[in-house]
Length: 427
Image (cartoon, rainbow, N blue to C red; front, side, top):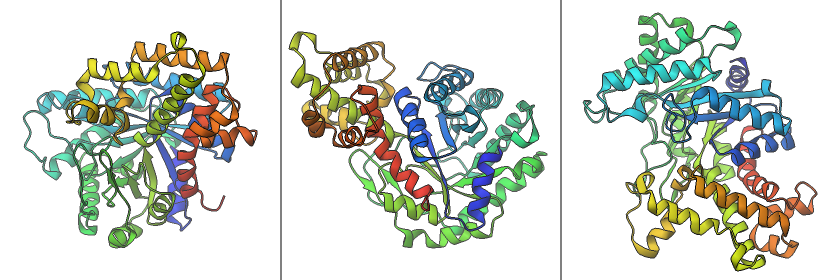
């Protein structure tokens, strides 16, 4: 995938450039990403699906990789974004969705998934075998993680049959943050040591060579390390450049490989810019953009409460909370409060477990009804200023209409602005 390799090459030559990876399957988030790129003159968009969202069993979105590709490309075409400038990536591709199975079975399924992603046109493949399966020790030894990653790389290479210039690029690494943020409260994180980061690269390089994948090693563009950033339910651990200075310098002597930073959600614009400067050339964001989506939808729900008669209200917020309580499987291991405190966690936790519930049919219907209500009675500018000031500014600037989709997209765009500024500081 030459588009990504070109960005990494520019970064390795000293340009302070990077790319944002938007990890979301929500259509409004994806639309916001394309429209933001158009508005900012950004030539390339990277959208990633996680192994929990999309896999051969459907994931929590119900989509297999080929369906997700059609879904994302359909939104791009509707927005007028050139499909050739869309990069699709697979995030945390490994046995994560099947860790309750013995390792042999889980890895068999992971091989099928990785091959399906590649055949469907995903060209950025994050190989993540850092999790323990049912019969594995905890934690999983690093050599086992690397061996399994090489096995999945071989499956990906076998599945690819296209132009060599468009062959998949890979992201590796064993110090991979938990997908979607930490489950428990955090105090401070240990930054990956430079020695460990280079040892991980050396181990993977050797295993790639031993399995006949030296040609694929040239397409490894990044490794995942821990720069000291994370978030839990209500706190963010901010990036401290001084703590990661040695780690940053260590990658400078490695050809064609930069760092990929996970869990950058909720970092400040200045922190994101510092990460790119310090060779974290790929910035991943997921819950941060769906949190912004939820903020916008809650604001529209509040506007509806002020402008629509009680009998005609969609009551999206009430519907979401009720469905989350009726189907607690996606949050009960993470949220432990009760009563009103639980309601707060369900709605406002930075880990944003709500994102698993947006496809629920009752919630989809309530969101449609909310949008229909607000199209029938558009909000006044004063109300918009009260509840969605960023969208209000976009409307006043002529960049958005009063349509609820435009208002949501404008609000999400503020989060994407910080990433764009970090990855394109000279634009």
